[in-house]
Length: 249
Image 1: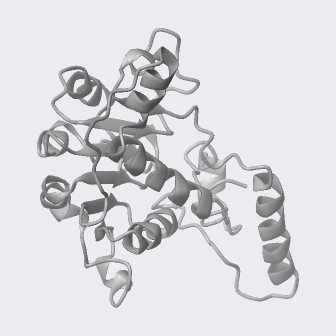
Image 2: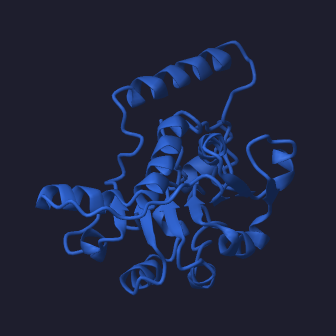
């Protein structure tokens, strides 16, 4: 029913010959919309607009366009591609980073796709760094202190993948020091996010309590996909979204 499998891949499941499928792609549209929401939130300084409206202030200020900006997507899978499609439609330049970049050859939504080994270069080039990678042994802390340090001061980090992919404490320190512009976060290392977490009080953070894909239809969408896969299973056909248990996705 979910895309992330870190809590499901217990030894008994890993060692079983039974196929395991997940809901990869079911929630991509809503998460792609959330990514664009984060981009526009910072480009248009929506927090400032809301605060000025609440205070009854008329103080015009300069806003930015996201057209022409670069979005680097770390983990260019279903969610990453849904984000790229929207970003490109709005005039953004998109670079993908994935384990097998050759699988995105000819993709119309990205300028290019590179391997994880080149993630730091892409991060340094990006105005919006989107994390859409699952939590696996390979991706844990994939965006660590060295990668975060490569970000532009004007850049925004957006995480719709998993909290453990990012060095959270370093991110907090950089946000508090305004070393980067901000972050839009739907996932965290510890969930629910504990009371007193610095993320709650940082003004340059847009925080979602892991509900960016919690649409009225999410459960129905997931069940419909499961039933479709179940019919394939019953008829002996090839299943969709078969998980590589060793890779974790």
